[in-house]
Image 1 (cartoon, protein in one colour):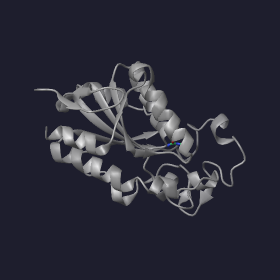
Image 2: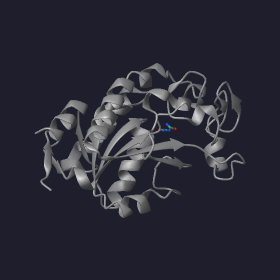
Image 3: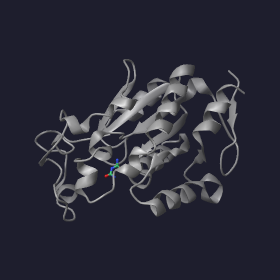
Length: 223
Ligand code: C5J
């Protein structure tokens, strides 16, 4: 199969659709809706809500051409045995991981807050990875899944840019994947962190990966 090319930054990015996957990171109610974990840390969740249409367009585009889609959710077991104290007892949030909130216990598997927001809900056949860490490879079967599917290239979207998205991209780099982040389909609670992360990813000849807009990516499907 011929390679497709995206007009990406810092330079053009070529990939084969049949060995590519889109990973949508943590578009969960706990990070995006009011009353969740993100807001308990004092963040303005409306910043993250603004990218929902762009993420939806990206997902629909990938569905349209049949490229593998994976969704991740940051969450912990109900007994919190996979949530180290170093993670739970950090800072001074209004509520901690595991505490009851308006959408159930924060970041606990099976609670309403852990669900992916309805607008971006996975459809049957799309893999959902529950991860206890920031990176999606840690304590998950992501690597085995990607190897089984012969995936070489990963596209990324989701939240937050500098935390779970960047951690997963870095983990993916170490495992040998080509990585591209959809710039307008990712967001941070902090404008400067988003921009700096994108700069960092692209620097030194794409040291962490390439970036492109949703339009650039979708255009490549029909080149
Ligand atoms: C955070 C995430 N920010 N999904 N999680 O704690 O980026």
